[in-house]
Image 1 (spheres, one colour):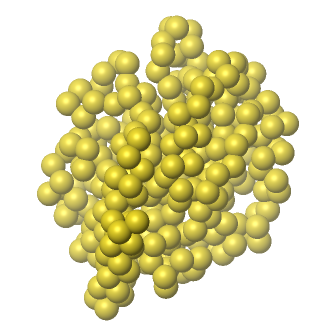
Image 2 (cartoon, one colour; image 1 turned 120 degrees about the vertical axis):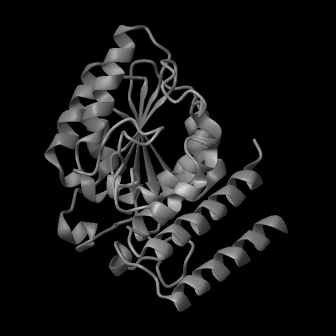
Image 3 (tube, rainbow, N blue to C red; image 1 turned 180 degrees about the vertical axis):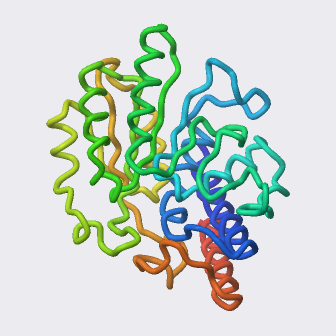
Length: 276
C-alpha cells in the first residue's frame, strides 16, 4: 500500500471540502475535517465498491452515522466518480440532492442519516441480513463520540454482539468535542473501550489521522463471530491550526482570509508529505 498516496489524498480532500463549505457559505467544518483520514482509508483502500455500479449486491456497505459531517463523504464520492465533481458547488443549493446530511438520492449513499444514534442500528440490520444470506459483504459505520450518548447506540451494540456480527466494523471519530463543548462535559460516556468490550465487541484504538495504522488495522482478519470497534483518536478541525480543538468550528464558515490561510497550511503539509 502506498501510504504517501493516501496522505496526499486526505490533504486533497481537506482542501476540496473546505472549498465547498466556503463557496456555499454553509457546512459542518470541524467534524468533517476530523474524519478525513478514516474516510480516505475506507474509500481508497479498504471497501469493495464500484462507482460504475453503485448498487452492486456484493458491494460493502458504509453508513455515516454522524451524518452532519457529510462534507468529506460527498467530496470523496465525487472524487471516486459516483457523481460529477462539479455538483459539489451546489451543496446546500435549491433543489440540490447534496443536502446537509447524507441522502439516498446521491449515488453511493446507503442511508439517510443525521438523526444521531440510528446508523449503528441500521448497520446491524444489514449485517444480520448479510449473515443470513451467507454473503461476504462487510458493513462499516462511522459514529461520533458525542453520539455515544444516544441510547439506541447501545441497543445496537448489544444486538451486534448477540448476533455475532463479524461482518460489522464500527469506527468512532473520537475528537472529544461537539456543538455544545467538550463531549466529556456535555455527556460523559466513560471508557468506551471497556463498555464495548463488556457488550462483547473486540475493540482497537488508533491514531485516527495515521493512515498507515488505520489501514493496517482495517486490513486485519476479523473474528467471524465478533463485531469490531475502532476507537479513532482524532482532532476536531484537523489540518487547520485555528480550527483545531475549537468547538466553535463545529458549524462555521471561514472568512476569505481564514479560507486562504487554511489552504496555505494544507499546501504546506502537502509539501512536507512530498518531501518525506
